[in-house]
Length: 304
Ligand code: ADP
Image (tube, rainbow, N blue to C red; front, side, top):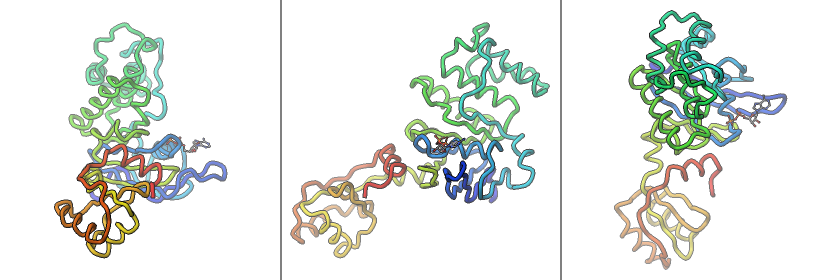
């Protein structure tokens, strides 16, 4: 694939004899922000640990920067923040970054100021990291990950537990990383709404299964407007839609409502056909599906 920097094909992972990741596949394109979305225990951290080389997959293929060879060399071009960022609480933000710079031997000291500025910690001065808010700690963790100028950042639940202000700050930081430095980002969350504005692509997983990979545009189309319909006989309504109106793109919700995703301009014709067939319509109007409802339905299992 032309511009893909991460390719996972059919990845499986078992702990002891239990498979917690089944046949997971995902392609991340350079410069994209891909959201790995799934409830707790879905397998997000497991996928990230496989990417980081902390776990070997039981099955499947992994390519980084277009190659499955020399993965450790490729990983040197990536940064990972998996689970909690490791921060020395007795050190300031600058000292934390300096420590990593010495440890890894990064020559450019000016980068410390650049990073403190981009992560919004330039004015924290002598304040020790153990006095930082959770959001500040997350931003410092991201700053540490940015130090080696990675081409890809893998961030595991970086907004988990943050207050709304902290979430906005971390999101803005990730957007800046992508826009100004061209960093590709794989980021996980158990809430689609936290990342829906940020990500260019989404991978929805549940119980170790890939539910759907889709672009932001596709997600918006899926949450598109539909006709919401209730009648006195849902089964007969579904039959009339199929047989008399050739409508197949619809969904029955809780056995009591039908959402029709096609022929939105045809509402009068649909209404007439249903009444001509003896149905009593109790609701018929155009609505849009909420993003979080879409995700919950996908990750939590279909209603029908
Ligand atoms: P998520 O990051 O989406 O919350 P995880 O990847 O952490 O999910 O976990 C996926 C599943 O794998 C869970 O059922 C979890 O209990 C299990 N799991 C994770 N790590 C281990 C481990 N080291 N040993 C055994 N089971 C594990």
